[in-house]
Image (tube, rainbow, N blue to C red; front, side, top):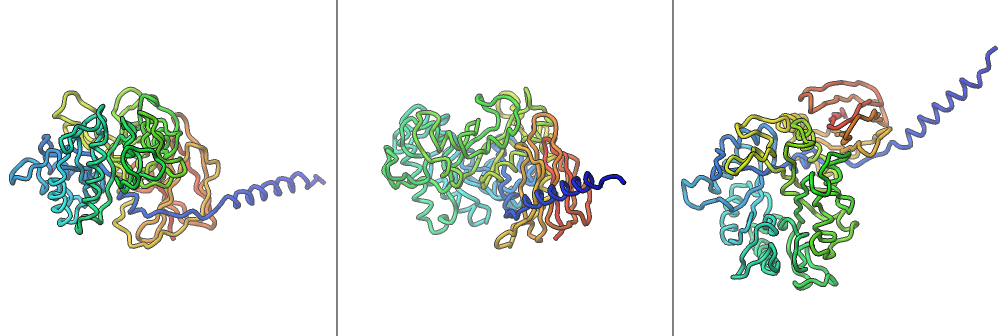
Length: 449
C-alpha cells in the first residue's frame, strides 16, 4: 500500500498556505467614490484664447472632469467680452464642474479677484482660491515693489498673507479653502511660503504666525530633468509626499526647498499636510506614445488621490493653438479629436459614475492582494449606493504581474478594464478570489454587497 505521508504533507502545506493568506486579509477603510471623482480636474483654454465654450463643455462632459482651474487672467468685466465670469458659470452649470479661482500668472489685483469670486459663489460653482501661478517664472508687483522670479519674495509673501486674510475676513467667501502659490521651492529669500502658517523657530524673514494657505499647491509634472525616462511607478513616485519623489514634488517645495534649501516640513508632517496639484501631466513624445500618455494620466489621478492629494488638475484639455508649436499635452488634439487619454478617462469616470455622496463615513472592505509587487497599487472606494469599487492598477514599465484579490467570504464581482470600455470584461459569482494580470493600467472591481 502506498504511503499516505506525501499526500498528508501536501494537504498540510496547502492548509498552511490558506491560513497564511487568511492572515493577510484585513479590513481596509474605503474612501468615497465621489471624493475621488471630485479630485479629477483640468486646465483649459477659454474663448479669449480661441476655444469656444461650447466645445469646452463638450470635452469636459465626455471626460468627466469635476473641476476646472480658473482665474482672472483673460477675464473681462465688460458684457460681451470673449471671456467673462459668466463664461465660467456657463461652463460649470452645463458640466456640473466647479472652478477654483486664482491670480494666475503675475496677477495682483485682489479687488478684481474678489469681485468676480462673489459672482461665482452666488452661482454655486466656486471651489477654492489659488495663489499665484509659478512666481519663479512670472513675477508680481505689490505695493510698488517687484517680487518673485530673481527678486526678493517678500512682496509676494506680503500679498499672499493679505490674500489669505481678506478671504477669511469675508462673510461670503471665508468658507472656501485658499490653495497656495505654486513653486515655493524657488524662494530666493526665506519668506516661509513653504508653510501653511509660519511656525516658531523657522528663521524666516516674515514673522512667526503669518498665515498663507489652507493647502499647499505643487506642480509635480511626472517627467522632469531628474526623471526624464520611463521607469516603474512613474506616477506613483511623482505623487510621493516624501524625499523619494524624483520630480518637482512636495518634498522639494515644502520639505527642503530646491532653490536655496530652506527647511520646511518633515516627511512625517508632509504625509499629513493638505495638498493639491493645479498642474501636472506630460507631453506626447520620446518615450511617451499616445497610448502611454493615456495610461499615465489615468494612473496619475489614481496615484495622486491614493497618496493624499485632494485635487489634481492636468495640463491640458486641448493642445494650445494660440502659441507657437504644438505642445501635445492635451486630452484632445488641436482639431478637437479625442486622444486615447480622453477615451480612457471617459471610461474610468463612467464606470465609477457617482454624484456627491451622503455617506457620512465610508465602510471598510476586507480583502488582500496576494503576490502584490511594488508596482501594483490598490484604492478601495465606496459608491453612494453602498457598493464597493476596488481599483487595482499597475505601473510596470515592462511585463505584468499575476495577482489574486482574495476576500473574506464569497463575493459577486464585476471586473472592468477602462482601456477596453465601460462594460464588465468578467463577472464572477460566489467566489472568494479574483485573478488579475496587472501591467500598466487599472481594473475596477465592483463588489456586490
